[in-house]
Each structure stands twice: as C-alpha cells, then as structure tokens.
Length: 322
Image 1: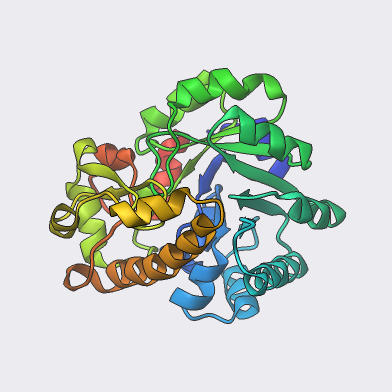
Image 2: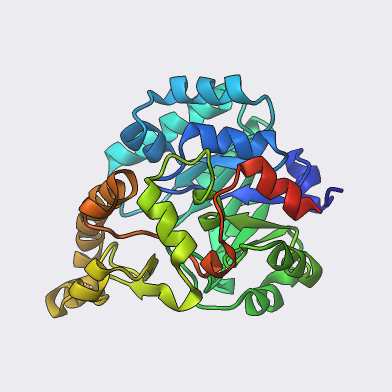
C-alpha cells in the first residue's frame, strides 16, 4: 500500500518519503536506493563532490545507472556565502537539470533564482522553513511547497513542534513536509494523519546498508536515546542537533564569549558563520567517515529513539508504506 498525497503527485513518486540531503552522509548509492524504493533521495552536492569524490556530473550519472526514478537536489542559497560558492551552486543546478532532476530543496536564503531556473525546466521547488516568517518569504519567491523543520530534527533543527508548525502553516495552501522526529512507522502515520503531505528523514537513512557513513556513527545512532541528542552552536554558529559523545561532553555545547559576541554583529556574523562552516565541514567529514578516532561530532535527530537496527533503504520504505 502506498500513500498518495499532493506531494507524491507533484513529484511523481510512490511514497511521500524524502531522504533529506545530509553533509557528509548523502552518498550516491543511498540517494539512488531511496528513490528506487519509491521515495525520493536528495543529492547534497558538496557531499557528492568533496566527501565522496565524484565529479558532479559523473556522480549524477552514477545515480541514474542505479535508478531511473526521480531524485532531487539540495541547493543552499544563503546570501553570506561567497560568489565562488554561488557560482558553483548555479553550475550544480544547471547540470542536475540537464541530467533530468526536477525536484529541488532550497535552504537558508532567498530561493528565487532556483525557482526561476527550475520552473523554466518544469521543475518543483520546496524550501526549508522553521516558522511563518520564512514561509511567507519563500512563497513570495515562488516555491511550490515547504519542508517544515521542527525541534526534533537533526542538524539545523527548528524551535517548534511538528504540531505547532502545522497549525502555523497549513493555511498557506501548499504541500507541507514534516522534517524531524520520524524514525518509526507510527511517527510517519502520525505526521500524515496530522495533515502533512509527506515526511523528510535523515537520521533513519544514515542507519542503512547503503549509507557509507562509518560503522561507529551508525552504532552511535542505534545506542542513542532521545535524551542523548543535544544542541550545540560550536559547529556552525547556530544550534545544531548532535549526539552527545565524550568529545561533546569535554568541549561543551556553547560557543565561547568572543564567538557569541561576533555572531551577534551585523557584519562579523557572516564572517564567523563562514569560518564555522569551513571548520565544521572538515570535522563532520572526519567523524562520519573515520569514526571514533576523530573529533566525533555526529549529527542526528530525536528520531534515534525509534531506530534500533541497520536496514536497507527499501526495507524501511516498505515497512513505512505498510
């Protein structure tokens, strides 16, 4: 049995399940496996190129050899990023369109340029939001749907519950995706019953055979309970959900006084965010790929409470589909 929603009909998939874009965990094999199973995997381009070492077009062609079903692309549009980065993201977008991608997930900035390019190619754009203010701005930019990031998500989590976000956003008239806290079929059914058109899962798909993250990372997810997920601003300058580890306990979860002061400044905030991003990208890559011997910042959401085994992506989607 599959769940047909506005989202599945809009994107052309069987089951309204997104494998969220994850740096550094979105390897091509995982993306393809989720799509082939009836959900939709999202390519994280920096993960593809800088972590998994695929030339971008070659990586997209690898995915196409593994599945002919729809896949998506994550496009970060934050204005504080360099012109070089924006140019690279535009190139990734153009190549993905040439390779047949028609679903795009934008985040952290104005998605208008992505919307214009995607719509011209017959594509669909959903934007990550954590509250009404950003949802309104995204809709003004022309997005087709919203990914509602709640306070149970991994990585950059929101502050509101799934229920609060639904109450705040359901009148906007576009499909809404629940992102955060979905680790069990019962979580999935609850989100759909509430009114969401689908879910986005990240942590659940790290604990799969197809994900190439280190076995230590997967084991940490299986061991963790909800209380083991903590927020830290030491990684990117804004709160990020990670697994509590000895390294985290030793270093603490708060940025230092100087860093917090610089992050509040209108100009210095952008420089600090860029510095944090460069540093954290290396730390997250090392921990995810090499395991406990490195600085182990492992991103995960509160859905860890419902994850107790390593499975294939197809087994997960079949079980969720009922």
